[in-house]
Image 1 (cartoon, rainbow, N blue to C red):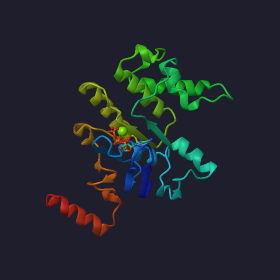
Image 2: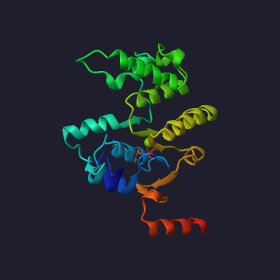
Image 3: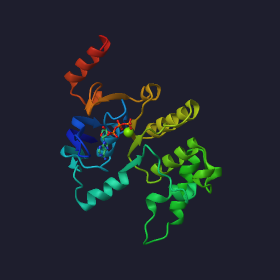
Length: 246
Ligand SMILES: Nc1ncnc2c1ncn2[C@@H]1O[C@H](COP(=O)(O)OP(=O)(O)OP(=O)(O)O)[C@@H](O)[C@H]1O
Ligand SMILES: [Mg+2]
């Protein structure tokens, strides 16, 4: 389980500092699909980057399986996080000079060892999973926007992560392709992958188990804790509130 507690993050650029996260707390249970919506600049990407540990919060805690990962943490934990967390970026960052297969293999690439044949097989499996079995050797420039987005998803799947953080995975896609991506994410979620997805589109957000809305660095609605994570009485109260039209 991933728990964020009272996160704050301020960016100091030119002019007045921006409070991008203002006292944000939430829990993402194993196996959940949570979506985050909100206006441009409301802090969605910042939250996703802090949850996925790409960005350290100024204050507040982030715990994963009961251990503090907010500020980096020890080496062993870094490895666990590297294995368990995968990110799809708002701008999907495929390398233009690498093929779909090579882009998918990126999480495995380092300068010390060549990529094993098992991993190449795994990457091909992931590309097949997102419907690109016949395009593994294409460069991004030879793929459509939706296909490029699917390579980015394959790259996130290749590690067999437990948590997927997806920032606008349907951005700049037409409706049918966007829905295909959503359907794929739901399928992966049904197989056990926890998903945190940022989106502008209500129709996609509504397909999550829970929708959180951000405004000016604050989560303003929704259950920040999953219903089944609440105590018996709290759960009943929640259920009653929902039946009563809450
Ligand atoms: N590196 C940075 N330096 C300075 N300010 C930043 C930086 N990154 C984000 N911000 C500011 O923090 C606020 C939140 O940005 P963030 O990218 O989280 O918004 P967002 O909700 O993802 O927006 P969008 O929907 O446009 O992607 C914005 O006001 C933004 O200008
Ligand atoms: Mg963003």
